[in-house]
Length: 51
Image (cartoon, rainbow, N blue to C red; front, side, top):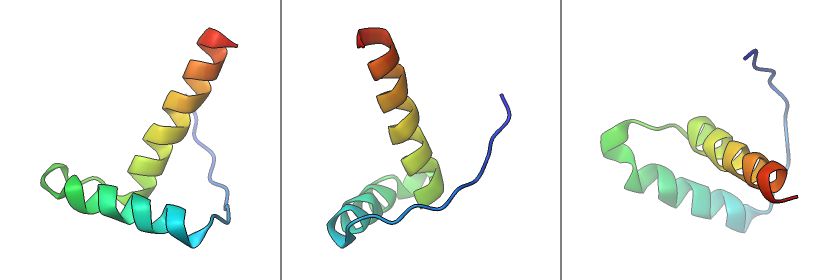
């Protein structure tokens, strides 16, 4: 599947929470981008399956 980059603006609290997830996943080497991508993918797939 091809990927496309786009920018978003989010609340500072969300940024803080994502940065906490990045720190918790330090041993996996996951970046902020990878974590946000995983969250968005799971959300969209969930909505598709239950929508």
